Length: 168
Image (cartoon, rainbow, N blue to C red; front, side):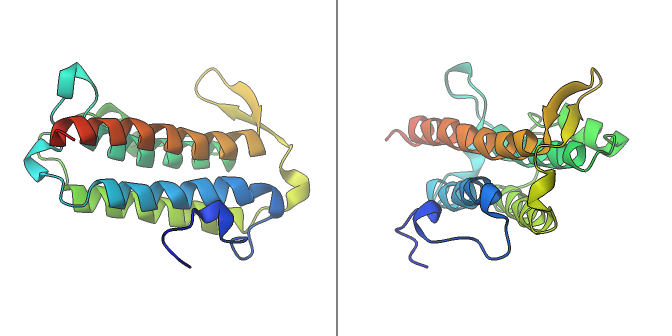
């Protein structure tokens, strides 16, 4: 596939149910754009907070963490202590991974999500799911769509932060 085309213009992701194609495309597009925006990004600026806003490192770590947590809820499982620790440390740059490691973790989590998508019978997408300690109601497709749009939202924020930090 040409890297100049957006994923949604590249045809269906094999074996992903039709109703989950937009979410799959958005997640794949997120990874592609993150890699593009962080090419030649200064590593020493990864955790810098331009104008007091969230750092590039935070956005990368947060996208991975949110996707992980939403997949857990989609599977009707409780969050683990490890997931709560990850959430607590999403914005912490001390001893944090490099941008390459953060991008790799995001890409791995997106691949995990796509593998999960392939196991979902389309007739279960409207099944009820619950989010968080308050057990807020949603549906399976609602969780998966939110995971994808949330990733895209943070890619947009990351792009602005990268541009400001690089002075472009």
